[in-house]
Image 1 (cartoon, each protein chain N blue to C red):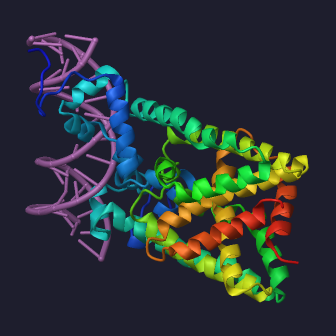
Image 2 (cartoon, rainbow over the protein chains, first blue to last red):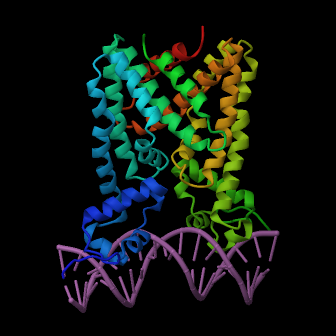
Image 3 (tube, rainbow over the protein chains, first blue to last red):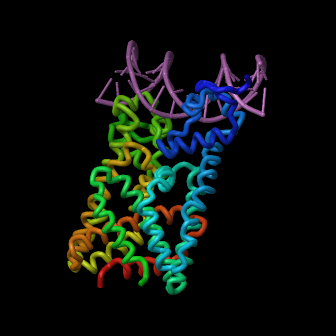
Length: 193
Length: 193
DNA sequence: ACCTGAACACCGTTCAAGT
DNA sequence: ACCTGAACACCGTTCAAGT
């Protein structure tokens, strides 16, 4: 038999296998945890073999992040296309962001690791896209050009800031009820009627 | 002569000298740049001597951050005590934050390095204090207890998010005029009339 | 009291050699 | 085409020895 059963059996690896393992590590333990030697141990090979697939640790990080970037693109905004009314769409977006914590895990990990050179450009691109989407949505609710741009920026900043605060307040974590009230406050304050 | 002139002359160092040098490095190059060996080179000693002052690199980081924390405490809120009217005080705070970039340099560096264990608790404490200050101020403008808490959270999240976005948009940096318009939008949207 | 110098561990990177 | 094993550089940490 060439590649039959067994747990310890390890097929030879591809660059994609490394990138996927790296992305898992980012979600679990953050960007700093992506290290060649530990990853190699986890994959059951020696660290030397890594350099057949990637020229550097940074290249691996980039590959992992590009993988995430293309997935999140559809994930976040795909579901919103169904909602026609712009005000309702914005409210739906707030609800989505508030209740789907899984999709923010990697994003949060990246926000905490902006001092890594590979992370910045990815977050830049993602932020740019989201800002434009928000601006367009606010525009559609009837806000003027500048007003829509500013409101979008404020909204996105609130999102980023919330992730920061939320993950940091393990200690003084908000109870569910207060959290819902906060989301409601955000919606009332930021979405035009 | 015991300790006369000369550039290459290096008095013996104290723990405080190391902490200050570390804080400078954080402001200039970020948390990741705080490394024992390069710091030792910069200070003109060998890295071995570092361990007479601190038990670990992390302890140095903590010392540097505590130093910053106690300074920023007075810096940010000290000047606001003069303004009696709570609405005017909030507007003044917005203006201060918008135009004093220097005081945010370290804070931004820390936000980008939240994956370092020593950074989290410092940011936690600072955020907690600022949130409480904002809550109290909104309370004084006449908002109800919950409304004030939520508004404070939104405001602070907007601040944190803005730092993130601002530093990241080197590419698409806002021109001065648009920036002022944005601050104005924030003030109108967030400060009760 | 503060510093040197040599040592070790750990991780990134290279590369000749294996299959 | 993919992997091993040994090597080297760099940084964190320890410690005996110096002043």
